[in-house]
Image 1 (cartoon, one colour):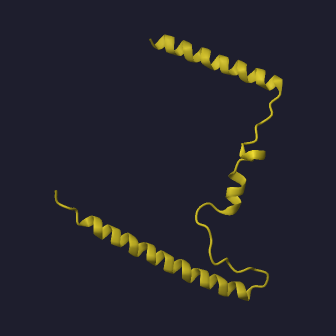
Image 2: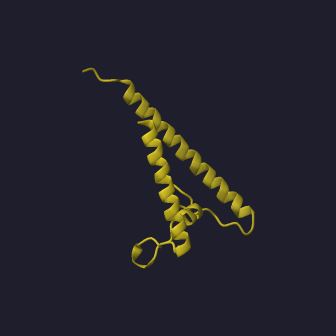
Length: 103
């Protein structure tokens, strides 16, 4: 089976794009550090930063964990449990009616 020569070319293009983006990031980081020196009270950016979700977003999106690493369970009042059970029964009843009607 013949090999596709364009695969190698696209990989090279991707590598070049990544390298140019990295160079641009480095230049912008250096520029930010220079500007931070001019402005008092602004800390310089850390040298190595984690990629992905920002720390503030990760902290707010992470579920609370109880001791032992398990997720903290929600406490629900008995009245609310009763309402949830009744709502679930009503949903299943509607589902069964729709299924019976379609058959």
